[in-house]
Length: 481
Image (cartoon, rainbow, N blue to C red):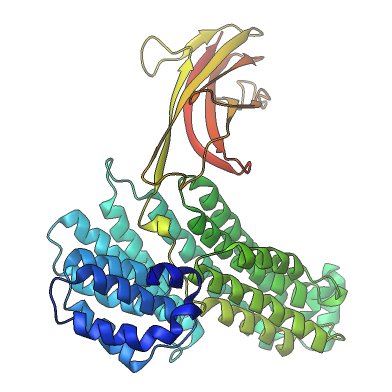
């Protein structure tokens, strides 16, 4: 009950911290109190989401590392990562690596150990921000390679690997932004700057190389945000807390991109502060989020947006790119990077599993062969499927309201014999509602050119809020004569 309260309102259990630490000290001398020890550790993690660690709390948690079995140690480490205490989690994972007998489990624990070490590097204020990013990316790359070693047909760690990959992309974008901000010192002299701006017909080019570098950084940050959005769309079985977590990470990339645009790249057209859109989105997330650590991430995002707003209010006459607005970008970047990232629950645990069994007709008589049809005729393609959902908790996940089926036909050789492009691509889309988990739809395809055509059938799930999630595909080869 104490851990359940602390998960939503950590301030409610702050008065009991001393008692929790005292009780944990007593339990660590007993070998059969693993469950109680893990729950008390979780309560300590919840309290310290918004407070710095005390020496007593640090000592008692470190003592618990040597007093629990592997399963309890994993549960404690998993909870530590979910509340953003990655240095603690790394200690647990590092101890477990030496004791796990199975090779697959060893790679899994090693991967988590590297991921938690990567995040703990970001909070090490003793070294420079750029060096922290480099160390973190290196650890993430090591962790990603370990996770790939775990992946096999019976246990596909697709989400875990993609999550690590997108985190690397975001950190790489942040490092590129830091390097771009450093080029503010390379601004050309005024006479040359005016000549460059006139020749390129770009007023911002008078500030020199930093303009080009900042534009590249914005593109990369927006690509990182789009990639995180796609990861969120693909995770249909993720719980609501994990989906909100991914949405906040997407907003972090967007906030940085919008901060650069509003403070520097729109310096000559001040007044359009696009970060306000992010502020509204983050405000809604803060109000809707229950998990205390995820809510803390959202609040830090809101603080970064407010930081940009205060900068504009204090520098209303700023019309150029200089150390002031570059400093604002760096402050915003540092705030977001040093925000403890809590790992989503979906990284460790799946509360439901959704799958689609798809059947497409017609099918060739021999696998791999093409289906033959005639030019200027219509081929009926029927798509049938069954949506299967298995859940470990009642009403814990998203339910399937509808299935969106998209069919796309492309010529296998888009350039014809005469060297002319063949314009015969076809895309059709329809949405069907499953009845007793079964759905069916049909398409009529027309082919205006002879030759081989590749037909791709994609399915996407729509939940009760019409959120789209790409979920599977099938393909056919058509030979038009």
